[in-house]
Length: 378
Image 1: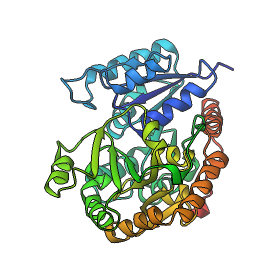
Image 2: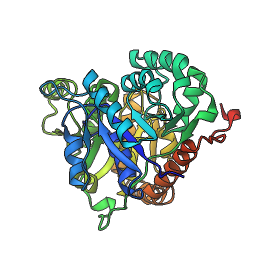
Image 3: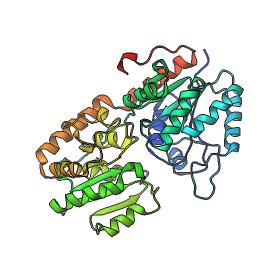
Image 4: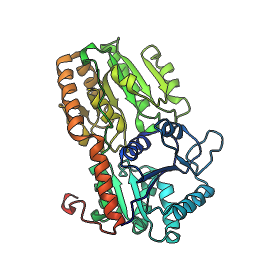
């Protein structure tokens, strides 16, 4: 049997949770299986991959600083590479990129197409509505879907009519657990959020909760780590609300470990479209309790009142109350810290992610696709 050759393709070369988690999976796998590519031009992901000792394939070009704009030339380069290198499976992350690759698939005989779904496509957003139309009518061109949450898999079956036999749920994995981590009670009152500044991440709404927290705990400090996709709206709102002394936006960071080490709480204020956030797993590995909305795939990672606190969606008052509770009740927070650390060790190590990907893709390469999800669950 021919050795498995898989090309993982990202539509952007920014370094988000999807790019980080799948790249780590590929780097931790046996050599020779995975190649890593972007349809975008040079970007932070490319630099990060090179820093890991691998050379990414860059099929596209950026128009100045704009990312994620797909050009036909990038698809031509990808097509040629697949044909010349004997790629058996193209594993694509990105809705538009997946659509174009389906159109090219008839010209790549024998190549299997895997679509990575890293969020829950069940909202009423324009992107999700477009996604569901595409998948309902064109899912026959996709050989396998890999999601990182059960709730996303259920949405594919229920909203898109995709057979459960074509879906595999594989959670993200942690490469290694950090060492020399300070006990939670020895850390400053830092409340961390790691996510790009994007409307669906709920930053503007989160500021209301932050104001409520600061009335009770004025020494609390809030840190936002992530690329700014909102043209400074979040920073302007921080200034307008007089929160500059308590809220810091530190921008995109390749290494978030210094912030994780000093955090008391990780807050996930997202309002829709979450899958299995890499930042949540990383925080749990540092023993950081999670506070967030009871949303999408988050309850699959965080056990309410064990690893953190989950509150009703878009309820800023409840979000603030949970943060205040964990900052004040150090005994409860420490218990959650111990629980979240143990859960990350038991359930979310990279080895499992690597093994499950390899099993699914080897079977796909052999044209054998077993039943992967129980229909009755949906």
